[in-house]
Amino acid sequence: MSTTASLASALADGTVVLDGGMSNQLAAAGHDLSDELWSARLLAEDPEAVTAAHLGYFEAGADVAITASYQATFEGFARRGIGRERASELLALSVECARTAASRARGPRRPLWVAASVGPYGAMLADGSEYRGRYGLTVAELERFHRPRAEVLASAAPDVLALETVPDTDEAEALLRAVRGLGVPVWLSYSAAGGRTRAGQPLEDAFALTARADEVIAVGVNCCTPEDADHAVAVASRVTGKPVVVYPNSGEQWDARARAWTGESTFAPSRVTGWRESGARLIGGCCRVGPETITSIADALRVS
Figure 1 (cartoon, helix red, strand yellow):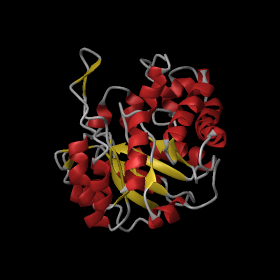
Figure 2 (cartoon, rainbow, N blue to C red):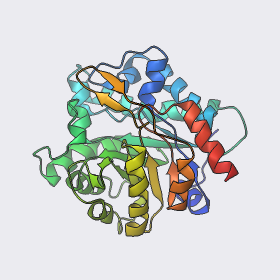
Figure 3 (tube, rainbow, N blue to C red):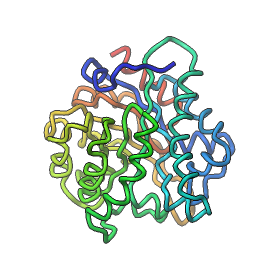
Figure 4 (tube, rainbow, N blue to C red):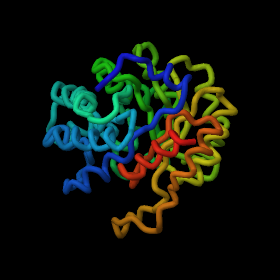
């Protein structure tokens, strides 16, 4: 099932449920994601696995699937010997996989949308720098990096481009320039900590960049803790007046040395009603948030 209804119109009328983490879905199915391409590797080697992951979230109650293109870049594919033409095909395939999942989804009929993920420059580096930002590149250089991939993804006709896990305002400015004129709406979501971007800028300043950007239909945060999301949602709504997008991690912490998650989840579905009251209209989860939690979010939003 898919729809020609505008996602922006849906946000004006109510709340839309996003999916959860792609990586945990694929890992749970037995796929090794230790490669630098992460989930994007499966676009080349096992696209049906990507479609199955999307389908799991649609059937769990998600209204929007975020594509497996977060770490898919021309530069990253080139390091694996994949040329530019094939890389373009794989980027477009990421949208096709999500569309196929939407067509297979069972259950009550409802609008389903596809968000094409445009991850930060640091995701291509595969060294964790997307959580620091400040790569030593100018805004113009970052724009030149992002524009070709954004063009290919836009030509695949997603419902929205998800400019996600953005660590600083320089990259946010570059991304907003890169998507200008593509004819596809976008949301912009920062990775935040302690009321600031990962690079340390106040969220008030970061969100303000989007206030006059007509392409931006929602602004907010992802890949942060649920506690940081509580603060960020209210700030984004107040500063921009736009619908807020929020999809944090489970609250567990990644231990890079041990290559394992530590701590306990703090993502309680009861939080989502507070986010909605503060202005959130696109609500889901990121790393370590799976289909069961997405079902709980959908249920919480329906009954409240």
